[in-house]
Length: 207
Image (cartoon, rainbow, N blue to C red; front, side, top):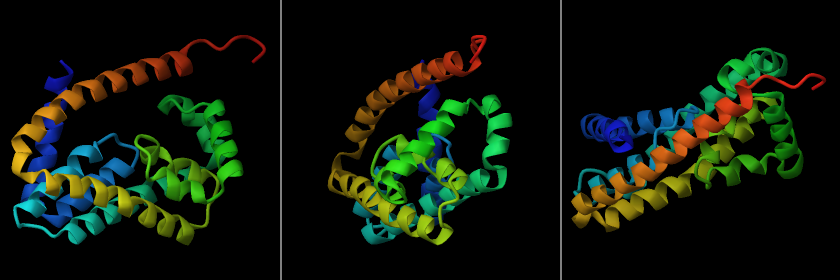
């Protein structure tokens, strides 16, 4: 079931990059970084495969991927800036953001500071959602852009390099991706169930 759902997503990513080139990489990585779970684990390795095929350069796809991360992250950052804490506290429950989530973001920035943006870009899942709390915390915009780009570049390069090295076996790689997609799909489904249960269950009186 999960494979049937996620297969069209992977096919769409491949089609967009194949047709749009570097701009397709920017677009798909931008979507991934705008808090929409589009898997960079497909975007960048496939781009690396096209490096192997001679269509792209490794530096080009890495920079395009990192630039896409910046574009999508800026969109999420400004949602946090414009909406602000009162907006998120009032309407966040409708997108499954609770007061506890905001408190966690506060502790994250208090503990790790602005460098949290850089290091989080090297971590799966977290890298997709870190921009929103950065905006809420009103992190310096220029630093946000710089740290986002510098943190995203090695991530994009690593995934593209893997795709380039394993390019001759691209068809077999896609089999492994499908297996990984099943696992990712299960994790996503469990995560959605958990957040629905956590955020939409009736609050206890006195809390």
